Image (cartoon, rainbow, N blue to C red; front, side, top):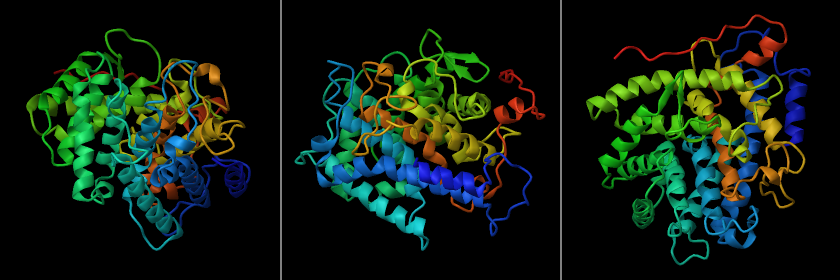
Length: 415
């Protein structure tokens, strides 16, 4: 997010992003703060997308994308695929809005065309930038994020010709050879199968069922899942677990009784988790730097962003307060000096360039998971998420001495 856009946002708000004493807004009278926030989010989407999509469309992604990684980690084989799949999963809802006669609508049309050109190049086996789904186990992860893009932007992928769709089905199905780890990776297999079904291909219901049932067994309470048998604090409930459970169940929940029952439980668990995520964001947009994969930056709030996109925020959590909180998070994680290199590529870090937080599976491409915080761009500019006046989020209210709602734990309803 550019400093100029953030300064413009603060200027519009008279130096504060937290005022709630504003005239009620209508669709015809959007609040200027919301307009400035959306402009900043769109600029962020452009900044993240430009180097990835422009180079892939031109067949120069491997030539020009640096691969920053832990020494000898060997991530060069998958890093380019990671950048593309994760970026598309985040900006897919925005592209799915389609073009219109506004400046932003014309911009979306340009990026939709660019994304399709990039996807075609990536799926062309003769291209120097053919996306590699053959080496190691990482392609299963990226097939799942590409699958999220398919589920979130079906009209975008309808822009592929029959050969392109066939190639897409083939690369997704090729990841069935990969045995997932006994943790959140089960959901990667599940998402791939659901995406294959959306593309008109055969899907394996056993892979879907196994992922769903096993995660139900790993539920520990109060909206939190364990990532496998052992619980540890990190952001994987948001990076992967809640959003992928929600995406899978959103498609299949009517097909069997057990899936229907889990859908109801997951809906409530997901809302509780969104409430927790909103409270984790500090008054200044910081959040606890705990657990693995902190270099995914704002992607830590994938679950909250998806809840806002779907209109399933918890009771008492206003869309505008989530807009403000996520805007602050993006400012803290993407506006720090050193976040991008001189050519516009992301660098490892949480707030700037901090290569020491890069685990062995972290490289330049994987950093584009931060794009998942942008999901609410899929809400039209007339949605209250964007038109409403600023509302302070919970931590702002709590730490400024204002009244704020007490937090309450969640328990599943008796079976």
